[in-house]
Amino acid sequence: MKKNFRLLRIILVGIFLLALAWLVRENWKSESREAGAPFFRMAGSFRNFFGLNERSAELEAQKEELRIKLESLEARESEFKDLEKFLVAERPSGKIALILSQAPSSPYDTLLLSAGREDGVTAGFKALAYGGIFLGKVEESGERTSLVKLISFPGLQSEAWLERLALNVTLEGQGGYNLRFFLPKSAVVQIGERVLSNTRPSFIIGQVERINEKTSEPLAEIILRLPLNIRNLRYVELLP
Image (cartoon, rainbow, N blue to C red):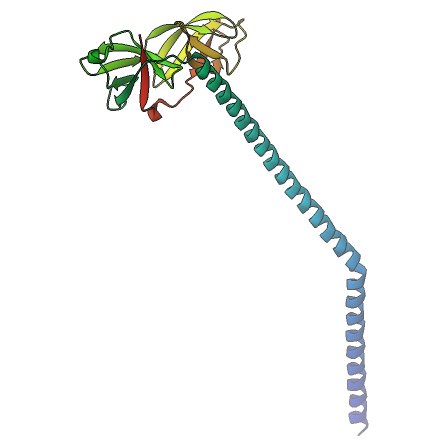
């Protein structure tokens, strides 16, 4: 009987100790959570802060990209306005001819037109786009058609006028509607400068698009950009 009573006391004491340990542990967890709450809130604030900073940096980058695009569009708009004034001021009257064929149906950098000797068109006639952009000259003239060799024809050399610097330059056709000329590196050429034809009256040929320089070469290579997309051109004007 005494043994049973002693065993019961041991069991009760064990249960009491387990209950006490459980209460102590739960109380410690609660206090730990309360004590750590400010730290967790601070960590969350740091995460939010750095997240906002990253988002702000992304927005600033997008803003800068849009600003650059806007400036580019404004520059192109100004460029087209200047070109429009030039065309209105210098536009002569001539014979309008339909473009019957161009590359790849015709040889590259040539145009086949719907006007020939019957229309008074002969070799040497100037071909213009929009009344003021110089494209090239009539190379061959048939009865009802004529062939224009564009100024960008491979290997074709043409005299031209660099407007801002008031310099005569020799253009060299590169094919694919590309042109170039060379000048000493000491000549300060700027991107966007206009190059005009050495004709009377003068017509615009293109604008400086890129300047290539090599340390081993005394001359700079200047690449021109035509002020139109010839592939979208439907009519040209022909002048003697």
